[in-house]
Amino acid sequence: MSDRQEACERLIANIEDAIESLERGKEECSLDDWDFFSPEEMEEIIEHLREIVAKLNVHLTAMEDNEFDEEV
Image (tube, rainbow, N blue to C red; front, side, top):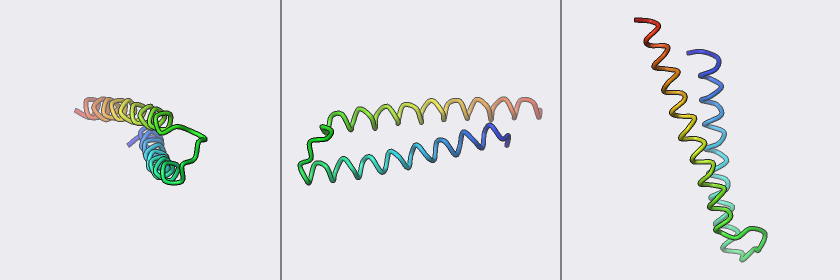
């Protein structure tokens, strides 16, 4: 696995951790009736991060496929 692939995997893991934290934060804000961010705004941020993870996963798969093709 290349350094670029490892970096991509770490980035995916970090973004997934951020999503989990934001989900917990969204629940806490809803329970405590905070008005810093609306649940809709929080969900937009979370959804955008999920889209980034999906794109990174596609990119990572393409890198792995290219690496496999080079080995054959």
